[in-house]
Amino acid sequence: MLPLLAVMLPVLGMVLAPALGARGAERLTLALLPAGFALALGTAAAVQAGGAPLVHHLGHWAPPLGLSLGADGIGTAMLLTSAVVVAGVAVFARAGFGTAPGMPERRTAFVFWPLLLAIWGGLNLAVTARDLFTLYVALELLTFAAVPIVCLDGRRETLSAALRYLLFALLGSVLYLLGVALIYGAAGTLDIGLLAGRLSATPPVLVAAALMTAGLMAKTALLPLHLWLPPAHAGAPAAGSALLSALVVKGSFVILVRLWAGVLPPSPAAMQALAGCGAAAILLGGVAALGQARLKLLVAYSTIAQIGYLVLMFPLLAVPGVAEKAWTGGVLQAVSHALAKSGMFLAVGLMAERLGHDRVADLAGASRIAPRAVLAFGLSALTLMGVPPSGGFAAKWLLLSASIEAGQWWWALVVLAGGLLTGGYAYRVLSTALRAGPVSAVPVPHDSRDTVALGLALLSVLLGMLPLASLGLLQIGRVAP
Image 1 (cartoon, one colour):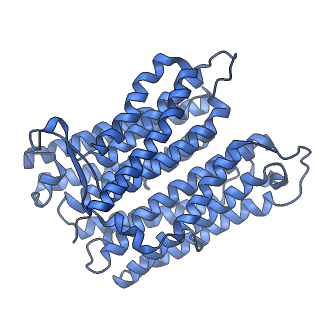
Image 2: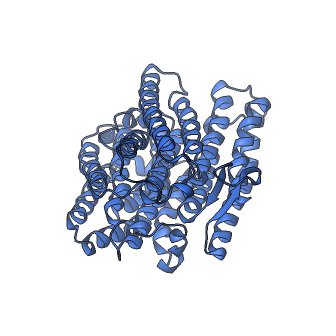
Image 3: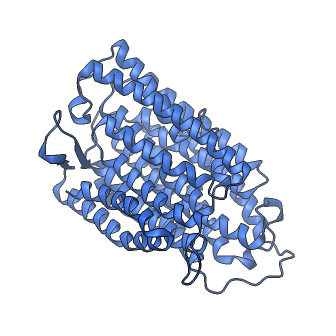
């Protein structure tokens, strides 16, 4: 029942939190964090020990009569990642959304904590559900929890960004649901395990594949359906931006992987097209980040570029001999990006708060007023660039070497070019932040938020130091070509 408990814990918290008020919701969320991490860790240990995915049939009714939840390698990795990132964001958010003793409760605090739990529960459901319609429910839970976080401050520009995000998300939902209906009509079931190997390349299935892929691309913000992401991430509070970039877009990515790796009939042309969109995202997103005047927008465009790396694995999964390496690289990229980007967004929020702005050209003196935040930004940038020994280096090296071994060397060139672009905009920020500037304030001596941002950034670097043998967990449940 571990996969079920991993979903139900944050969902029950989400349901109970509004009745407890802002102060009670905050306490409940913090109390659930250790239990959530223990469940994720226990799930990983059980999957590793058993060497096979965990499966739980709801109500003891097996598909096709019932629904099932499961945890395999990629699902377990994302359960652990979500537990770590949510814990870090929750501790960080106490300064902005906490309610001190004797202080009146605020609307934003009352809303934030249930939304945080909803995002946690939605992602856990997205990576454990084994039914295409249940996955649709998970996507909607993620969407309707993430959109309000974008406009928590109520400013006109954040409301506009949230509405744009909502329109793209609803478009993605409609396309995905239409595809689900077509698959049900063609196969008579929506269970992923039963669908494996059952679908053939008939016109309804091909149309369903196109619709579902486009819908998930919109929710993942994969170019060219990425236009909602920069204003949404730039306008959200730092804690919200960290959640959006690190976790929300990963739910739809995992579903996309499950569809093409085990449900839909193989299509080399579709895989090349997906990777082509990823390559364009890496290059265009990196160039756009280089030209941004605001720091949060720079990091938001960096997210678009880093999402592109995730889909470079798709054309390599059908090549015997390199599929295992490509799969490990893609999953490791998702995890390392989540840790690095959450730490980076939190660090950027601290720098902007203490400087009073987020203009890249005026960051001089930031290293004096927020030294740990600047260090966290730098460590996160190392992971995003793919500098050894970070987790980003391990992921990108696996993808690069797999593409060369598969004879698809052009993806290796994209990986290298993307690393150079990432280094360019990271250098632009750090070279300015490390200069002396007209900053009269002194560093904050004790602030747990700096520690959280630095801790997440350090984890993204330490991830690359894990021995490759320990990453065998990620292969459990993968459908071999």
